[in-house]
Image (cartoon, rainbow, N blue to C red; front, side, top):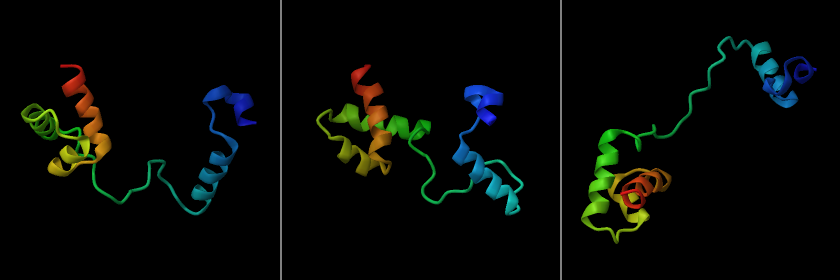
Amino acid sequence: MLQTAFGEQAMGRSQTFQWFSRFKAGRTATGGDERSGRPVSSSKPEMIERVRQIICEDRRRTIDEVSMLVGISIHGVKGQFHTTVVLS
């Protein structure tokens, strides 16, 4: 029914029911819930520069090694690795 009225921009049926349940339970905010875990730090300029330095010092280092040295996820290093090595 919502998709008929609003087209493709409307939420799906199951997501609509989830939000309905949340508001029925007393939720008033529409923002996301707080999540546990480490904050995203791989995109900070200091981390980008640190990864670039490590890669430029020894281009034979693996992504796993760089990830452990800098302390960010492998996924975070992969994005920076692509811009540092492939695009340079």
